[in-house]
Length: 533
Ligand SMILES: NC(=O)C1=CN([C@@H]2O[C@H](COP(=O)(O)OP(=O)(O)OC[C@H]3O[C@@H](n4cnc5c(N)ncnc54)[C@H](OP(=O)(O)O)[C@@H]3O)[C@@H](O)[C@H]2O)C=CC1
Ligand SMILES: O=C1O[C@H](COP(=O)(O)O)[C@@H](O)[C@H](O)[C@H]1O
Image (cartoon, rainbow, N blue to C red; front, side, top):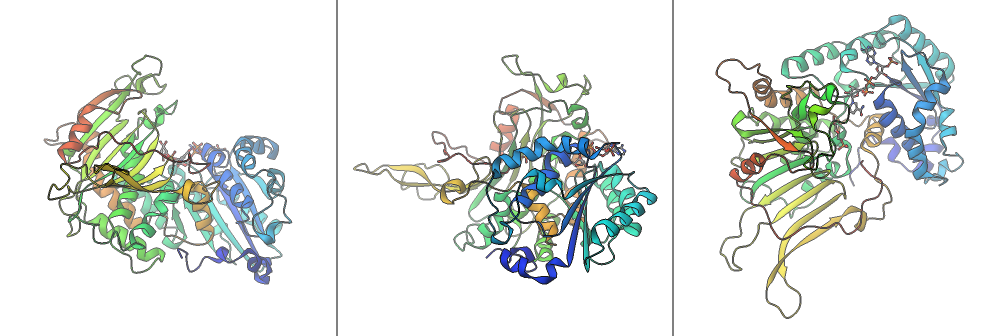
């Protein structure tokens, strides 16, 4: 049973609500940057979904903190479209959990628990004012009071914000936790600087560094899949695996965010964090236990065995207008300089230098404005020796992260009937088909609950972050023209909006031994419901 030992809320809700200690405890969520985009699109809808699922503590308050001069009604108006999507799903369903059935799960009931606090980030006066308000208005009658600070802010504000909060607005009678969002720096030196500023104030145990891919259902499934099935143990190495691919595709471009994206590029945007996290979970050794630190120790160990990525193992691309001329190219996005060399697409290869993985290429591909939206891990096994059935396509184990969350293994079997032919087919675990699920929680919902429960295994530890930047920084500096010396700049190929990316990417993937299966396409049996969108 895949549970965290300290998972208090995983007890039955009857137990939870009958526990007298629960009524003596209060939890406040303070969302800093509450007027912003992330708060509106992700943080508040995630908290509201948890509320509808009966997963928030009995006594809780949510304080939206921002500088903007907003009345509570104005603030609520901003949040309403995101919350409406959640209530459209939950509708009038009564809470699933017995003890919560007396609570009406509507945005209005949720609204009663929310407030708006106007303050500057990093202001000692405002931090002290917030503390006073929380103590007086919300926490006074409780023996314990916990505070979760969610920094939905630009990272340049993190250090100042926590420097003011920690001495003046930390609960003295419960836990304090701080959730921070990417980007965590721009390269190794800037990440180290940000980490040391934060860690001068916060303890590691108070810091919850979000990578939202770690909250996606199929990414969470990687550990149970690998370590709960002895069937996979013998094949999970260079003895049977030929190559491993991790792919992220979006079928939209930067859509007005080009000005921001141009300073980041696809490698920093999704590869150094989301895709590397998936790679780590696929490649790490068995952890000593499922406790946070045991898992994170194994993740760090495998990262330490990856050398810096070589620029000759990288193909870059930037999208142009679609072939039919209808969809704009990257440089048409306002804020993108006309001479931008920013990659919106990259394929790159890395190797893990240990006994298990030596010689196996780990191929990452990510791009915006491609032909579809999807994310997956694809493990290609070696050719079948002996040639008994002629030339067969390779077995592939595919973990489809989105859409249509599933795991399938491409195998051969006999064509049913009188024929003696072998035919390619699959063992298919499609979540929406196999399980009675009408909804998979959004990654932010899952991670907010983990933070509430003090479960850190799906958050990025400081040493893990450092290793991730160490692997990517030399190559990024070459691309950025910062490497100096003889470093040759990497060519940025163009590709039309809606295509598969530049052809050089396919050539690189083939060079590293990946064999494309032709004539066979896996089809989801049932379309996924509302899920990790
Ligand atoms: N938006 C998204 O979907 C995602 C965002 N993120 C990350 O989450 C964090 C927050 O994102 P997002 O909500 O888009 O950010 P915003 O740019 O919307 O900023 C959030 C709030 O911070 C305040 N703020 C912004 N700039 C400044 C400034 N220079 N000085 C002081 N206050 C400022 C504003 O509030 P006010 O002026 O009212 O105080 C604003 O509403 C960022 O780190 C981002 O990279 C990560 C993944 C997805
Ligand atoms: O972090 C990011 O992720 C999104 C993609 O997330 P998903 O959950 O929709 O797959 C990406 O669009 C964005 O550019 C990036 O910053």
